[in-house]
Length: 91
Image 1 (cartoon, rainbow, N blue to C red):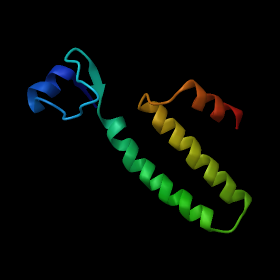
Image 2: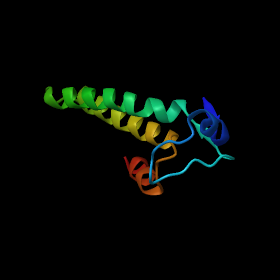
Image 3: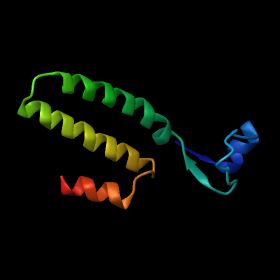
Image 4: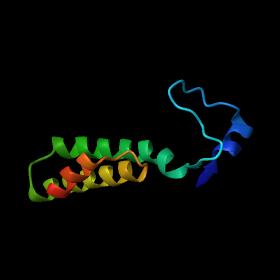
């Protein structure tokens, strides 16, 4: 689930991203950031389907739950912010 920067560099040499760098001494999460876009895609597809359906209390609850899941997933990747946390707390 985690990988040391030096292990990554020894295996792959580079990551081809011109904006970021791999710190050999840093430990990086692998599973959580890799699963986020896959699960987020599924959430977005379900969200879209729900929006196309009839308006109901259950639909609103499911839409809210999907948004909470998205926020939790994004935050688990350490991509969240105090601003998005504040918005979620206000709901």
